[in-house]
Length: 272
Image (cartoon, rainbow, N blue to C red; front, side, top):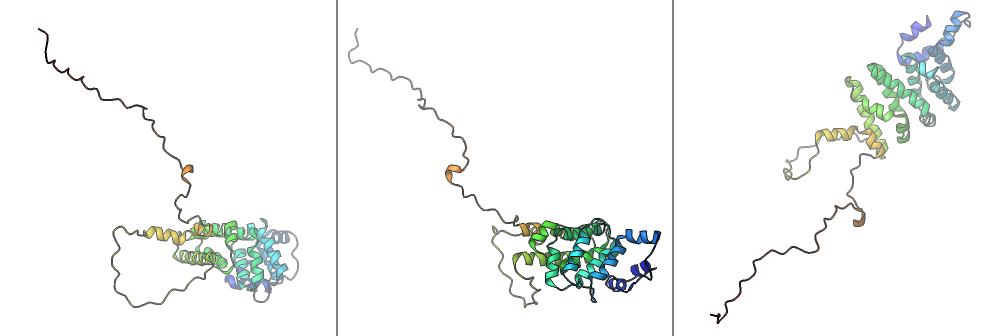
């Protein structure tokens, strides 16, 4: 039937196929109840009205309706990979910045995507994880949206998975978000340059950065966005506010060393 054809299509072709499906008559009886209770079929039916010819969300009212569908536990919370792919395809086909900004401002819609991403990672569904990572890369995320939806934390954890393709996509997305948070575009890789003479070895007391620390700095998205990773400064408290050690009281008088009394001088004329 139509469901079998839908599952056999590539994600980018599913929306086009859904728009071509026109049932000959409204189903009745058990078939009608099954279709109305299937969240994926309900989404397919709604998306035919929300999307244009190029699979994009047509306007602000349609984006608002999509956000409402995703925020609903009955629809957005029950979608399988088929429905999730359909949502990802339509959002990635949308280029209108105002519409995408409206989606990012919806904390409920972003949290739904984050839950899908977490579920795909815990279930080791690498293909679905990559689809959702590419969707996050298309959305104009802000620091506030990353913090409110926990998307930064979840994507940051995606670099630890075993799948190399997923790990690479997560690393690139984290770098792009860090560049966004600092207000600087992600710089492309510099071209190779001619080798220069080796620099003199640093002094023995020079401070070196461990490779593990550099890696933690690259992927510490949470600390980079919140500013918690900034080094601490020396205390600038006045002297009268600093804690001091108790001063041991000394006795008021120091004991004198005991010396033997001097011997009396002999008299010149001793009595006989």
